[in-house]
Length: 399
Ligand SMILES: [Zn+2]
Picture (cartoon, rainbow, N blue to C red):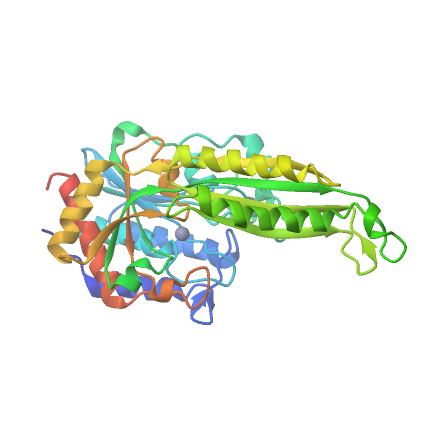
């Protein structure tokens, strides 16, 4: 079995961490100067490794092996959440680079643009599988700054470049390594997670319409307080969902707004952003029905309650044969210290899985911390994960 160069891997990880350092983490939002620098840095590393590397018109870094024969595509992302961790995304990309070097040929490497969703939803990987139209790009803006994606691409120097699109015949499949971003492996003292499926999520904007009025003169009996209706529904969800949810189902009320949000005004409007996630499509439908029933019940009160907007992502099962290859590699390098588990977070692999057999490997996150500058994984675990990933890639390539 091919051995990785542990020092080379760690050196690259620590070098990349220097681009956009923030405390012990990094701040590299999509198409910020630091993010653009990291993409050029990666192109240089891939080129050194003998790949044909470039940045395409959506900002994807794509390194292609020149040798003939079917390849594996390995990737993740380089940008980060704001003021976040140094391994989320970066680790998977540099595992790809190290596997390409350790195996010599048969590996293409990608860093997908904007997995973290500063502008949209998986625009890099979705562009690669042909799902992003020019009109979608026209409409996207940075969620924080409002800068249009077109302008950000132009500033980055990527505007006008062709967008690379998947040639499915080139690949045996797609592999992505990632930190777990949860505490399960760390809590159990395990080193490797073999991902079975990536959760789907159903996301809702729930709107409450009441009547705005004076907080001093409006008697309680005649109020139509939108905020009260919202709080009642949020509490009803917390009461009801445990009875219908699965063992790993999660649900979140993420943002609540009252309109107006003033101390002396009964709010006439309110809205909440709500989502739930699970790997089981049937369970997601059950939860839809439970939510709709609660909303119907809420409409018996003084305010009008509507599910105004929703967006869904579907759960994606990982390829069984690829999972088996990861499990064999884990058993060899970390006997007894691995488990199969779903991914509660979304990843580019769920997009690639629509077109290619795909799999994911997790390494432990210390304390389960992620999307925070304290995010970390022990060096030994970073090295072990990459070796398991490399062995599995070699196995799938038939070496
Ligand atoms: Zn990530």
